[in-house]
Image (cartoon, rainbow over all chains, first blue to last red; front, side):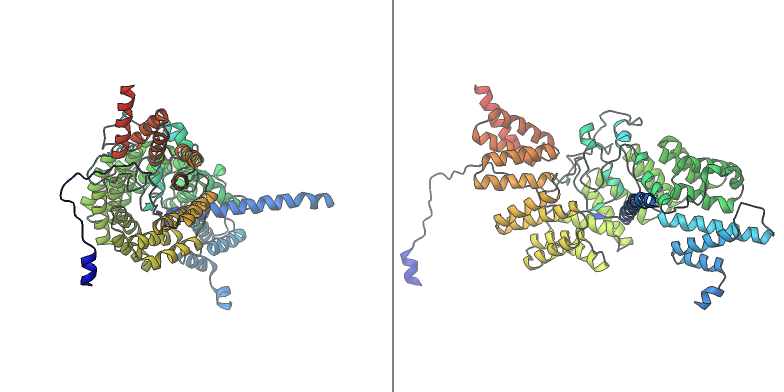
Length: 72
Length: 520
């Protein structure tokens, strides 16, 4: 180990200027924590979803009805 | 089964109602009413009349409970209410006195550089309540856009919003028509019977959503009670609030409070002031309420919510902590404190709050997503991906899925796997094509690959999708500056300055551009 130390010596400049350019970089949008939902909101959404489901079923039933009436 | 057959059906119905089996209760009541209809013919005996009355009242209660939502929580302003606001006093309110223009330069207020903003220029919260949507946009165009915080688009007016849809929903479930035909109801007769008309009122208000009829009934009933019943005054106030007559609602609530101090009434009154965009008065109402009901959790939460909406995060957190001292399972408080910690660079503490939620039994996509992010930024890489995977498994809608993929993209960027990041952002866009943030990040990745034109296109899309974010504008400004298009760089930088005035890099670009232009 001491041999290696002698081989590489540290260079620390004691004078001269250090310059650094501030390059504008692109910005990423930040990670997004998802907000939790309140119980009321969840219930509202569930009721809406159920209602939409019922409407869809009723529409389906309506669509199926006319041919059977014609058949009669 | 023998037992149920021999049990008195009315008692059984009442018991099911108490055990929250409302559908069963309503069914039993229906059969009972079919046997001896109430209000059709004069009943044989007085007892029979009383019984069918009780059944009728019980059925209204069960049907109401099925669709009941806490009125204090519900708030949805339509576009018309927002843009054509009659009750606003000043066009440009002083900073700190209006929810519309929250004070931005307060100490401790998060900047968009660390915390993403919603469309209304407010940092995203840790908890969506229906009223989180009430941040008002400046232009009609912005108002029409779907708000990012909820999955539903904003309705044209509040009358055409959720309430109406709920009303039709309750109609649909009864193919034989509504249980009570409101237009044929003799309101004056019911108003004289206090035991019946309270349930009837709630039925009309919550189940049928016929606010005008409910208002008529409440007016008659309060008259019959000689204006001495505070309950009816609160109900009148609720009706006025729904109809948008805010000043009348305020009068009713104040009068009810004079008669009887009650937590709910304080909450309703504060809600009126919030709708009138007078947060300071709402805070006063809450504080008066706290004088009567010290350390009441709902009142404390109300204060914290208003402070949060006014960008005063540090005080809001104080109040949320106060809430947690009273009720240490309060989801909203835990979530809000957690997100504040996350965005103030303390993901380890945020992780503890979210873990607490998990212990309490909250089990959904949002929570796992937040846990995943917290784990990643707290350098617990082993948990992070499995949490996000579970979030993906629990997803309930496309928008949520898009957000989880977007966050996964961030994790990928963090570990330097840019191909995965690219795919994640692309997937996010596949699920939600209006995800401005994902477009912006894709643009940054494209630019690293050297595809300038593609990056430009993505940035422009991001800027048009979410003009409230400063990132796409700023990135566009830097990009155009590099390729020498100084004019568009300047306009983009100005937009970025509008969105985030304190951003130092934007200021630098603007300064150097101004120097260029003046030297020409």
